[in-house]
Amino acid sequence: MIPACPLASLPRGEALRLDVDPPIAVFHTDDGEIFAIDDTCTHQDASLADGWLEGCEVECPLHASRFDLRTGQVDAPPAKRPVRTHEVVVEDDTIYVVPSDAPPNLPPGVTLKGQA
Amino acid sequence: MNTVCVVGASLAGLLTARALRSQGYGGRLVVIGEEPHRPYDRPPLSKDFLKGAIGEADLALEGEDEEPGIEWRLGVAATRLDATARRLTLSDGTSLAADGVVIATGASARTLPGTEGLAGVHTLRTLDDARALRADLGTARRLVVIGGGFIGAEVAATARELGLDVTLVESGPAPLAGVIGLTMAQALAGLHEQRGVRLVRGVQVTEVTGADRADGVRLSDGTHLPTDVVVAGIGAVPNIAWLRGSGLELGDGVLCDEGGGTSVPGVVAVGDCAAWWDPARGSHHRIEHWTGARQRSVVAAASLLSGGTARPEPARPAYFWSDQFDVKIQFIGHARDADTVTVEEGDPAGGSFLAVYRRGDRPVAVLGVNQVRLFTRWRRHLETAPVQAG
Image (cartoon, rainbow over all chains, first blue to last red; front, side, top):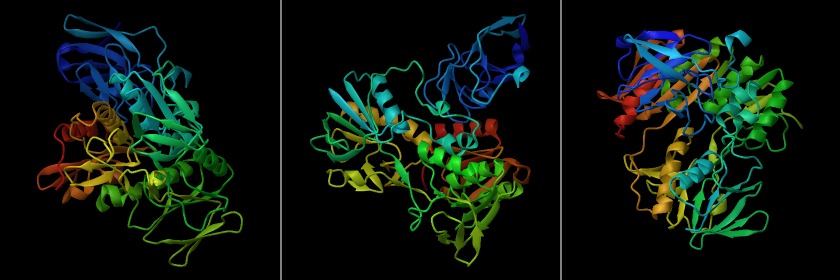
């Protein structure tokens, strides 16, 4: 379990990037839910934490594919693979992320630092 | 409707076919594509694909488990349409009658007159174009790019990254001046020059020299630029010649209403070949951007299925991107609507900045250069309060 940040430091509508490998994006939706997904778009190297958060979806800041924060599913090209989701735990007013065991869907040309 | 035929198997065709399915159409769905390939993504052709950073499989637009029930007819062109009968004639001699027709035949690269049959002269629009250019650049030392639009600027940047000696010839004052305005285009020109692209501005190309293979480019000021490869990035023309005599109204593209409906019921057009009515401007115009095809495919499908009664949402301002070297360029809106442009973040000389174009006090366009996060905020602002043309 990775500590992300104090709950109070991530207001609704905002996102945070965790500099792990691969990076993880944590979103606090306008409805008050918190989700974590891999930060890198599955199409090309772009940070989804820089994207456009709307409801339970984030739109990639470069090419506008939308990912569902709950399932990781993507709506339309250019991305075609889902993004990996992670479990979020809020305890003692701190946000924690439980990284997934599943393999990430990184875009072509992006590798884990350990394998670069 | 029992049969819908989509003519064109690229982004607009695929997304309209998908939208028809997601909007409940359950009948026969035929997609005709002149190229032999399944739908692929074109923007990387001048960038990562040309550079060799990604392969052909990475270009596929369809997911692995996708099954929208499409009958593909690839490697076959539509050669004729009788719009009122909605009957298509195909290049293999067969014909096809449909209850609904989607025209998504795209555009073709404009070619340089007088270079037909001359090896080493390229345009870049299709996968086959990109394969041929990639092969040619692999053995070349020098490249001359004619035209400083997106394709020209991106190919110049990619070739420079591949180590070629690159000259970009632009007839105007700076690359991209037509879309992002002169002030910002001058700023971006510096990015190319700093990275070793030689810019030649304000001159015309008069001739590509060479017997069987291009060996140089002659300019209107008399200069001769020796080269191994030439790329012409001088715009695109809509693929509508096959529709002459079809009964559809044509202009610079298939003329459509603001929902993609053509002059004939049961026929819609979308993507680079279609000139939709823009109520804010009071004219038809084509949108040649990727995001335009994406947004309009959903609208076109709704128009077709509703018989034209679906009311489209107001069009979002045009958004596009370009990757040149390590620089991500993003733009939304229309620079020509602005009377001022100000840099609001960063510094053009530093290679990372954001500029806002205004008409009076109202933002009408935004340019982001390596400012992804801030640009997204501005894009959201402009898209949720759509700009009106002045």
